[in-house]
Image (tube, rainbow, N blue to C red; front, top):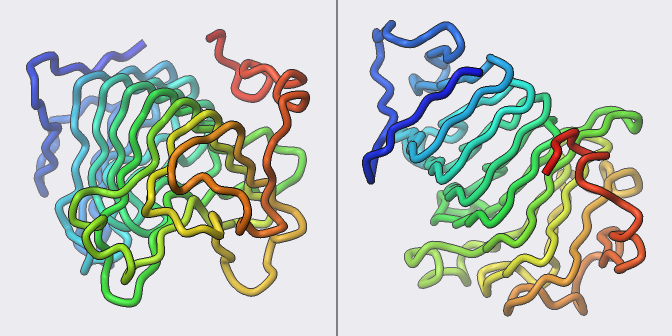
Length: 253
């Protein structure tokens, strides 16, 4: 197991163009099309705590990933992921996040991992003009995959700047990046910034018959189900009783 940890309060994992002082388990990439920097984790069993992963490109640079995770059974504890569009790329494998903070705008938690987020906080930010915020864009490509995004006991809201102008920037729980997209919010607080429809289409009716988007016993002003799209689900207690976390994600929690 590789452990990357900064225990002092307020630690920031900084990215500098031209730096090569990273272990092989953590890779540094430069995205030529946007001149932004991406850190990628590829080593199985990776663990990070008390670290901020921040991409400072800003909303104007559009897609700008702060961290890409492709390590199996990677875990993040009390970490912060900060960016705008595409902040956290949950690329593949099994991933666990606990008591983390994640900031962004468009599709800012995305990918095709089996990822569980517990007691975490998702804060949408002010995007570019005419953009719509989406917390998630899960990318399952095949019905036989066991991938998806699960948020349990978390807070889903906007930062103070977004809350002031939310009427100008519709904000949604997610939209389907790929045909069999899977995202679930369990017993989470959904703030007033969330649009009453809850979810957003990707393009027309793409994936609306094959996705699964669900909510279970969520609370808060944004959790009302009356205006949710018919292609999303309010999960029943019986359905939850029939599922165990380790069956979906392979973690012994």
